[in-house]
Image (cartoon, rainbow, N blue to C red):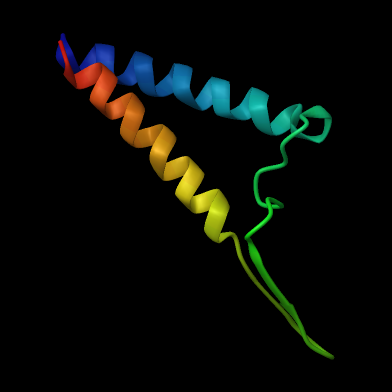
Length: 71
């Protein structure tokens, strides 16, 4: 019973992420292009590290984990 609920929740999370990625061009905040993300462009290469985006996702996921673990 527990595995079934976990699979349903995982499916809903994947559905939500897919919808967010689909409409991400229309959102006012573009994840991966936030101020503070590191971009170094060279002649033949580009190094890109989304530091602020990773921190934002970490905070949101930590909050959701805390919220759901309160049960």
